[in-house]
Image (cartoon, rainbow, N blue to C red; front, top):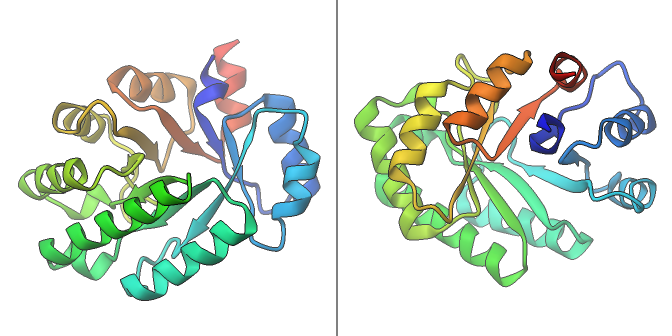
Length: 212
C-alpha cells in the first residue's frame, strides 16, 4: 500500500486539524508539526502509527552546524523522534566536502544518541553524478537514517535516476526518501520500485486514490 510510504505535506488551505484528520483517514507514514503543534499532533494521532516529524532549516539549508545542532536539541527536548533537515546548501553548491561530511556525522551522531530518525536532504538537482556519488559515500561514513533527494522547493525534485544511483552507492542500512513533484501513483510506485523507502508528497489524496 503506497500510503505507508508517504510523508504527507499539508495543504496550506487546510487548518492543522484538517491536515491531521486527512493524514489519519489516509493512514500515511508521517506528518509534520512545528514545535508549537507537536503536543496537539501527538494527542490527535495517539491511536495511530503515524509519525509526528519535524523539519529543521527547511527549505533554506543556511544554518551553521552549531546553530543546527542547537535546533536539534530543542526538537529532541520537545519529544520529536524523526526530523528532516537540509544540508548546508553553500557547502553543497561549492562542493565543500569536509564540511558536508562533518555536518552529516555530527547530526547523525546526535540523532543516534537521542533515538531520532534523521533525514538529511541533499538537493540532488544541484550536483553532477560525481558529486552525488561522493555525497552517498559520505553518508556511508556518517550513517544517517535517511538520505533525501530534495526539499521539493528548489528547481528540481525527485528523479528516479537519483534514487537508482543512491540505492546503488548507499549502504543497505541507509534508507532513501524522494520528494518534489510526486503527484501520481505511477511515479510514486516507480520511485519505490527504484529503492525509495519514503516519499514526501502533498498530493497524497491523489496518489492513494489512483492506487485503488
